[in-house]
Image 1 (cartoon, helix red, strand yellow):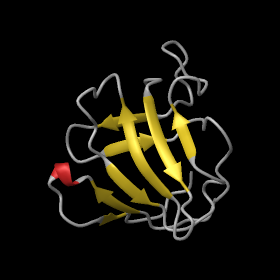
Image 2 (cartoon, rainbow, N blue to C red):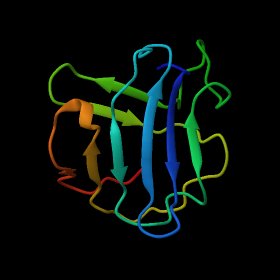
Image 3 (cartoon, rainbow, N blue to C red):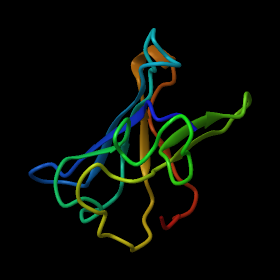
Image 4 (cartoon, one colour):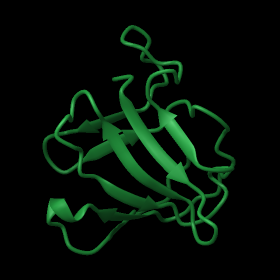
Length: 119
C-alpha cells in the first residue's frame, strides 16, 4: 500500500495491450525485476498509461484504491491496479493473460493465466 508503486501500460500500434513494467522506487531501490504481461487483447487502455505512483490519489495516509504489489513469500505475486494518472481502462471482456518474466529472474519461457479475471 505504497504511493510509490508505478505500473506502466501501453497500447502498442498493433497487438495486445501490455503491462510493460512494475516499479517501486522506494521499497525496491535496487530494481524490481518484473517483466511484462500481454493482456490478451486490445481495449484495456486508450493510450499509454501510468497507473499509481505519487499524485494518483494515493499518499502515505490514503491507501484505499492504490496500486500495489504484494509477494506472499511463496508462489504468489499480486498486482492491484489502482487509479490511473490519466484515462480509464475500457475493456471488460475476459481473456488469458501471458506473463513474460524479466530474464534476471531466471525463469524460462512464459506463464499463462489459468482463468480469466475481470478487473
